[in-house]
Length: 320
Ligand SMILES: [Zn+2]
Image (tube, protein in one colour):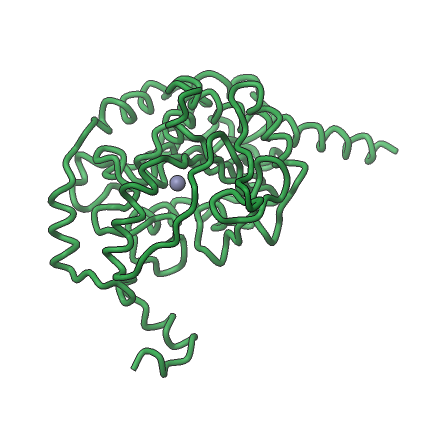
Protein backbone atom coordinates (compact mmCIF):
# COMPACT_ATOMS: atom_id res chain seq x y z
CA UNK A 1 0.00 0.00 0.00
CA UNK A 2 2.73 2.44 0.96
CA UNK A 3 4.06 2.51 -2.59
CA UNK A 4 0.73 3.84 -3.83
CA UNK A 5 0.70 6.79 -1.47
CA UNK A 6 1.95 10.11 -2.75
CA UNK A 7 5.18 11.41 -1.25
CA UNK A 8 3.29 14.10 0.60
CA UNK A 9 0.88 11.63 2.15
CA UNK A 10 3.71 9.31 3.10
CA UNK A 11 5.53 12.05 4.97
CA UNK A 12 2.29 12.86 6.79
CA UNK A 13 1.80 9.26 7.93
CA UNK A 14 5.46 8.91 8.89
CA UNK A 15 4.67 9.57 12.51
CA UNK A 16 6.62 6.85 14.27
CA UNK A 17 9.68 7.08 12.04
CA UNK A 18 9.83 3.26 12.06
CA UNK A 19 7.82 2.65 8.89
CA UNK A 20 10.85 1.66 6.83
CA UNK A 21 12.41 -0.55 9.48
CA UNK A 22 12.52 -4.30 9.57
CA UNK A 23 12.88 -4.17 13.34
CA UNK A 24 9.71 -4.13 15.41
CA UNK A 25 9.32 -2.49 18.81
CA UNK A 26 10.35 -5.83 20.38
CA UNK A 27 13.64 -5.85 18.44
CA UNK A 28 14.33 -2.26 19.46
CA UNK A 29 13.63 -3.04 23.14
CA UNK A 30 15.95 -6.05 23.04
CA UNK A 31 18.73 -4.02 21.41
CA UNK A 32 18.25 -1.18 23.88
CA UNK A 33 18.44 -3.52 26.89
CA UNK A 34 21.75 -4.92 25.60
CA UNK A 35 23.35 -1.47 25.70
CA UNK A 36 24.98 -0.80 29.06
CA UNK A 37 26.63 2.35 30.45
CA UNK A 38 30.36 2.51 29.71
CA UNK A 39 31.01 5.92 31.27
CA UNK A 40 29.23 8.53 33.36
CA UNK A 41 27.37 11.44 31.75
CA UNK A 42 26.97 12.92 35.20
CA UNK A 43 30.71 12.96 35.92
CA UNK A 44 32.09 13.71 32.47
CA UNK A 45 29.52 16.23 31.26
CA UNK A 46 27.07 17.50 33.89
CA UNK A 47 29.83 18.21 36.43
CA UNK A 48 31.74 20.32 33.93
CA UNK A 49 28.60 22.13 32.76
CA UNK A 50 27.75 23.13 36.33
CA UNK A 51 31.32 24.30 36.92
CA UNK A 52 30.82 26.81 34.11
CA UNK A 53 28.03 28.56 36.04
CA UNK A 54 29.13 32.08 36.71
CA UNK A 55 30.95 32.38 33.40
CA UNK A 56 27.86 31.26 31.45
CA UNK A 57 24.17 31.12 32.10
CA UNK A 58 23.30 27.44 32.51
CA UNK A 59 19.76 26.34 31.62
CA UNK A 60 18.21 22.90 31.80
CA UNK A 61 16.03 22.61 28.70
CA UNK A 62 14.56 19.20 29.44
CA UNK A 63 15.48 15.64 30.37
CA UNK A 64 15.18 12.29 28.66
CA UNK A 65 11.87 10.77 29.76
CA UNK A 66 13.38 7.29 30.09
CA UNK A 67 15.32 8.52 33.18
CA UNK A 68 14.98 12.28 33.80
CA UNK A 69 17.24 12.33 36.86
CA UNK A 70 20.07 10.61 35.07
CA UNK A 71 19.73 12.49 31.77
CA UNK A 72 19.07 16.21 32.33
CA UNK A 73 19.75 18.29 29.18
CA UNK A 74 21.71 21.53 29.41
CA UNK A 75 22.47 24.56 27.34
CA UNK A 76 24.89 27.35 28.19
CA UNK A 77 24.55 30.98 27.09
CA UNK A 78 26.70 34.07 27.24
CA UNK A 79 25.65 36.02 30.33
CA UNK A 80 25.11 39.32 28.51
CA UNK A 81 23.13 38.23 25.51
CA UNK A 82 22.77 41.23 23.21
CA UNK A 83 20.68 41.72 20.07
CA UNK A 84 23.59 43.83 18.71
CA UNK A 85 25.87 40.82 18.58
CA UNK A 86 25.74 37.81 16.30
CA UNK A 87 24.84 34.51 17.90
CA UNK A 88 27.14 31.53 17.58
CA UNK A 89 25.69 28.09 18.29
CA UNK A 90 27.88 25.12 19.18
CA UNK A 91 26.40 21.64 19.47
CA UNK A 92 28.06 18.39 20.54
CA UNK A 93 26.94 14.86 21.26
CA UNK A 94 24.20 14.71 18.63
CA UNK A 95 25.89 11.36 18.21
CA UNK A 96 26.65 10.50 21.81
CA UNK A 97 29.60 8.19 21.12
CA UNK A 98 31.52 10.97 19.36
CA UNK A 99 33.42 11.96 22.49
CA UNK A 100 35.50 14.87 21.24
CA UNK A 101 32.34 16.60 20.04
CA UNK A 102 31.07 16.76 23.62
CA UNK A 103 34.45 17.41 25.25
CA UNK A 104 35.40 19.87 22.49
CA UNK A 105 32.25 21.95 23.04
CA UNK A 106 32.99 22.13 26.77
CA UNK A 107 36.70 22.68 26.13
CA UNK A 108 35.91 25.61 23.85
CA UNK A 109 33.81 27.28 26.57
CA UNK A 110 36.43 26.61 29.24
CA UNK A 111 39.56 27.53 27.32
CA UNK A 112 38.83 29.52 24.16
CA UNK A 113 35.50 31.38 24.38
CA UNK A 114 37.10 34.07 26.58
CA UNK A 115 39.13 35.47 23.68
CA UNK A 116 35.85 36.30 21.91
CA UNK A 117 34.29 38.01 24.92
CA UNK A 118 32.00 40.83 23.87
CA UNK A 119 32.25 39.91 20.19
CA UNK A 120 29.55 37.25 19.92
CA UNK A 121 26.65 35.78 21.83
CA UNK A 122 27.40 32.11 22.49
CA UNK A 123 24.89 29.31 22.88
CA UNK A 124 26.25 25.82 23.48
CA UNK A 125 24.45 22.51 23.81
CA UNK A 126 27.35 20.21 24.70
CA UNK A 127 25.55 16.86 24.71
CA UNK A 128 22.30 16.48 22.77
CA UNK A 129 22.09 12.71 23.29
CA UNK A 130 23.33 11.73 26.79
CA UNK A 131 22.13 8.10 26.88
CA UNK A 132 24.19 7.50 23.75
CA UNK A 133 27.14 9.28 25.40
CA UNK A 134 27.02 6.83 28.31
CA UNK A 135 26.45 3.69 26.28
CA UNK A 136 28.80 4.79 23.43
CA UNK A 137 26.13 4.66 20.75
CA UNK A 138 25.18 6.47 17.57
CA UNK A 139 21.47 5.88 18.10
CA UNK A 140 19.33 6.93 21.03
CA UNK A 141 17.68 4.30 23.24
CA UNK A 142 14.83 3.89 20.74
CA UNK A 143 17.31 3.05 17.92
CA UNK A 144 16.85 6.38 16.14
CA UNK A 145 19.75 8.29 14.63
CA UNK A 146 19.18 11.82 15.97
CA UNK A 147 21.18 13.32 13.14
CA UNK A 148 18.57 12.34 10.55
CA UNK A 149 15.68 13.57 12.65
CA UNK A 150 15.85 17.34 13.19
CA UNK A 151 12.40 18.16 11.83
CA UNK A 152 8.97 19.30 12.99
CA UNK A 153 7.08 16.43 14.57
CA UNK A 154 10.30 14.44 14.99
CA UNK A 155 9.75 11.09 16.72
CA UNK A 156 13.13 11.56 18.42
CA UNK A 157 12.85 13.09 21.88
CA UNK A 158 16.44 14.43 21.85
CA UNK A 159 15.62 16.39 18.66
CA UNK A 160 12.18 17.59 19.82
CA UNK A 161 13.58 18.99 23.06
CA UNK A 162 16.53 20.59 21.30
CA UNK A 163 14.33 22.24 18.65
CA UNK A 164 11.98 23.57 21.33
CA UNK A 165 14.94 25.04 23.24
CA UNK A 166 16.18 26.71 20.03
CA UNK A 167 12.83 28.32 19.22
CA UNK A 168 14.00 31.87 19.97
CA UNK A 169 17.66 31.39 19.10
CA UNK A 170 18.61 32.71 15.69
CA UNK A 171 22.16 31.55 15.10
CA UNK A 172 24.36 33.44 12.66
CA UNK A 173 26.80 30.54 12.64
CA UNK A 174 26.41 26.96 13.82
CA UNK A 175 29.24 24.52 14.53
CA UNK A 176 27.99 20.95 14.98
CA UNK A 177 30.84 18.83 16.37
CA UNK A 178 31.16 15.20 15.29
CA UNK A 179 33.59 12.33 14.77
CA UNK A 180 33.93 9.66 12.12
CA UNK A 181 35.13 6.45 13.76
CA UNK A 182 36.19 2.93 12.80
CA UNK A 183 33.11 1.66 14.64
CA UNK A 184 30.96 3.44 12.05
CA UNK A 185 31.88 0.56 9.74
CA UNK A 186 32.32 -2.25 12.26
CA UNK A 187 29.35 -1.61 14.58
CA UNK A 188 26.92 1.10 13.56
CA UNK A 189 26.56 0.45 9.84
CA UNK A 190 25.94 -3.30 10.33
CA UNK A 191 23.39 -2.49 13.05
CA UNK A 192 21.58 -0.13 10.69
CA UNK A 193 21.60 -2.86 8.05
CA UNK A 194 19.91 -5.20 10.53
CA UNK A 195 17.40 -2.62 11.72
CA UNK A 196 16.34 -1.72 8.19
CA UNK A 197 16.70 -5.18 6.64
CA UNK A 198 18.98 -3.98 3.87
CA UNK A 199 22.72 -3.85 3.36
CA UNK A 200 24.39 -0.52 3.97
CA UNK A 201 26.69 0.99 1.37
CA UNK A 202 30.31 0.64 2.49
CA UNK A 203 32.82 3.47 2.32
CA UNK A 204 36.32 3.80 3.69
CA UNK A 205 36.82 5.70 6.97
CA UNK A 206 39.17 8.58 6.15
CA UNK A 207 42.28 9.11 8.29
CA UNK A 208 42.17 12.72 9.42
CA UNK A 209 39.90 15.66 10.08
CA UNK A 210 37.33 16.85 7.56
CA UNK A 211 34.43 19.29 7.58
CA UNK A 212 31.00 18.96 6.03
CA UNK A 213 29.41 22.03 4.48
CA UNK A 214 25.86 22.53 3.23
CA UNK A 215 25.33 21.82 -0.48
CA UNK A 216 22.80 24.66 -0.69
CA UNK A 217 24.96 27.11 1.29
CA UNK A 218 28.54 25.81 1.16
CA UNK A 219 30.44 28.91 2.42
CA UNK A 220 33.68 27.52 1.01
CA UNK A 221 35.94 30.24 2.50
CA UNK A 222 34.50 29.66 5.96
CA UNK A 223 35.13 25.90 5.68
CA UNK A 224 38.64 26.59 4.39
CA UNK A 225 39.38 28.79 7.41
CA UNK A 226 38.28 25.90 9.64
CA UNK A 227 40.55 23.45 7.81
CA UNK A 228 43.55 25.78 8.00
CA UNK A 229 43.05 26.27 11.73
CA UNK A 230 42.67 22.54 12.42
CA UNK A 231 45.76 21.79 10.33
CA UNK A 232 47.85 23.43 13.07
CA UNK A 233 46.62 20.73 15.46
CA UNK A 234 46.13 17.57 13.44
CA UNK A 235 46.25 16.17 9.90
CA UNK A 236 43.51 16.72 7.33
CA UNK A 237 41.79 13.75 5.64
CA UNK A 238 42.68 13.19 2.00
CA UNK A 239 40.30 11.95 -0.68
CA UNK A 240 40.24 8.24 -1.52
CA UNK A 241 41.19 6.87 -4.95
CA UNK A 242 37.80 7.95 -6.31
CA UNK A 243 38.24 11.54 -5.11
CA UNK A 244 35.73 11.01 -2.31
CA UNK A 245 35.50 11.26 1.45
CA UNK A 246 32.91 8.84 2.86
CA UNK A 247 31.47 8.31 -0.60
CA UNK A 248 31.00 12.03 -1.33
CA UNK A 249 33.07 13.99 -3.87
CA UNK A 250 35.62 16.33 -2.34
CA UNK A 251 34.65 20.02 -2.59
CA UNK A 252 38.05 21.32 -1.53
CA UNK A 253 40.77 19.84 0.63
CA UNK A 254 39.16 18.32 3.72
CA UNK A 255 35.63 19.43 2.83
CA UNK A 256 32.59 17.63 1.44
CA UNK A 257 29.06 18.98 1.21
CA UNK A 258 25.72 17.43 2.21
CA UNK A 259 22.23 18.81 1.88
CA UNK A 260 21.75 19.67 5.57
CA UNK A 261 18.04 20.43 5.49
CA UNK A 262 17.00 17.57 3.25
CA UNK A 263 18.91 15.08 5.43
CA UNK A 264 17.38 16.60 8.60
CA UNK A 265 20.84 17.13 10.07
CA UNK A 266 21.34 19.19 13.20
CA UNK A 267 23.40 21.74 11.25
CA UNK A 268 20.40 22.34 8.98
CA UNK A 269 17.72 23.07 11.57
CA UNK A 270 18.18 26.87 11.48
CA UNK A 271 18.68 29.52 8.82
CA UNK A 272 22.20 30.31 10.01
CA UNK A 273 24.37 32.03 7.41
CA UNK A 274 27.39 29.86 8.26
CA UNK A 275 27.05 26.18 9.14
CA UNK A 276 29.52 23.35 9.40
CA UNK A 277 29.71 19.83 10.71
CA UNK A 278 33.18 18.94 11.99
CA UNK A 279 34.45 15.36 11.71
CA UNK A 280 37.40 14.37 13.87
CA UNK A 281 38.97 10.91 13.41
CA UNK A 282 39.85 9.58 16.88
CA UNK A 283 41.14 6.15 15.76
CA UNK A 284 44.16 7.46 13.89
CA UNK A 285 47.53 6.27 15.24
CA UNK A 286 48.59 9.91 14.83
CA UNK A 287 46.19 11.40 17.40
CA UNK A 288 45.39 11.31 21.12
CA UNK A 289 42.14 12.14 22.91
CA UNK A 290 43.62 15.53 23.71
CA UNK A 291 44.49 16.24 20.07
CA UNK A 292 40.90 15.36 19.07
CA UNK A 293 39.46 17.82 21.58
CA UNK A 294 41.95 20.47 20.48
CA UNK A 295 41.00 19.89 16.84
CA UNK A 296 37.35 20.61 17.64
CA UNK A 297 38.33 23.79 19.49
CA UNK A 298 40.61 24.84 16.62
CA UNK A 299 37.74 24.33 14.16
CA UNK A 300 35.51 26.71 16.11
CA UNK A 301 38.28 29.27 16.69
CA UNK A 302 39.26 29.21 12.99
CA UNK A 303 35.67 29.72 11.91
CA UNK A 304 35.12 32.56 14.38
CA UNK A 305 38.30 34.37 13.37
CA UNK A 306 37.11 34.18 9.77
CA UNK A 307 33.75 35.70 10.76
CA UNK A 308 35.48 38.51 12.67
CA UNK A 309 37.57 39.36 9.62
CA UNK A 310 34.42 39.53 7.47
CA UNK A 311 32.87 41.80 10.06
CA UNK A 312 35.84 44.18 10.14
CA UNK A 313 35.75 44.35 6.37
CA UNK A 314 32.07 45.23 6.33
CA UNK A 315 32.64 47.92 9.01
CA UNK A 316 35.28 49.49 6.81
CA UNK A 317 32.92 49.43 3.88
CA UNK A 318 30.20 51.09 5.94
CA UNK A 319 32.57 53.89 6.91
CA UNK A 320 33.27 54.58 3.28
ZN1 LIG B 1 28.23 12.15 14.09
